[in-house]
Image 1: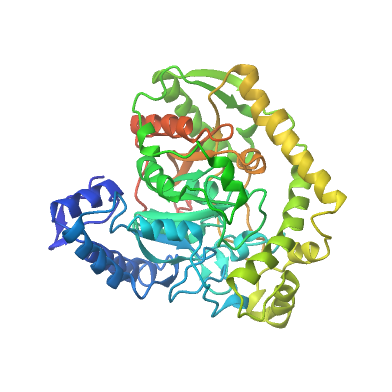
Image 2: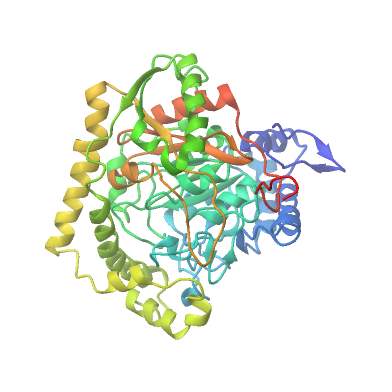
Length: 514
């Protein structure tokens, strides 16, 4: 929906794209200061009042001043680029050296203000973006417990799904997803270890990109595991996701993995091709259809017909070899790396905190159990604390197993065997009812193969199931973001399935007279 009209003298930000906003600022019909004020008003009306989706954990008190300075700069020297003056929300595990805290939703890090920005934050500021605030998340990016409720943190409380307030947002980038879905900002940054960008994006009707490991620096992001962690865009369109990805990507001396991205970073907006599906060979991974996700699978069947009609060559079915061989070893790797990576992060970005290690976090949670663990525990944390170092044979064997079966004998094998450009499948099931007693009931997901491999994954709205968003995923080999963006954009433009939320209290159906 273009947002070039005014309502009651104010610019209409609902469903506005970054391109819409930038065009309005370029023409002089909108300023960054007006834009930030419009989003702050919407946050007050929707996030903190009205439906109270509770997606924002903290607002940047300097956002208005930053916007005003960027407006002045635009008049004097012109815009720095397509993000100049555009507000961006960050997940509250991304460090900012400003007046905001960085806590991963935990009370253990309350008051911690990092000594410097995360690398991606510095890139956003340099591009002229306005850091509007921090979003709520599944506490510690959902690695604390075996039976968590996504979208809840001790600091932020529960984020609600704007499509049905009694349903879950998924996670762990819960607030980023809900906020962008509700037009509380145009752009947000999430993070993913396995599913934490693509799952909440799909469930909240967004485009989410989990990029190749190393395309975006992780330095300054509260970690789970360096072999799988990455940040990525969460937006309402493929074009906006490509724009944000371009700004986020870059080589960082503090994150060795980014050195591998040399020659692979692009202006991703160059790959937005409405005819991008023509001639593409796409494999349909049938083992991720059906089951608890049968309703979404039916929606994706229609998506397959669109892909074919737009010129794609579907290889249907293909199977992802060895996908069952890294379930347990993935968790083992995450727990080993969590212990080591958390200590390294705390030393660099929380130097004044009494919390120095994962064991310190465990002890804090035990001492503050009533506030920190009212609904679920910290089983994964306890197992991680008990692990050895990264020189452990169990760790090294598990990591080797993960890479072998997810990469060369997984995604790469099936792509090569069938000469495919990408794989597709339903991203996951629709949003489930939030239940603090039982925890999450998310059903199946297509996130793990790309997550374990460190390969790119894009999810795009594919329609709705009883008013809840459903999505299709495009997955490829390392550094195939240009191809995936081309395919995802062509599909999106052919279907335009994105729908704004209505903030319904519930979408449960009751029989007449019942």
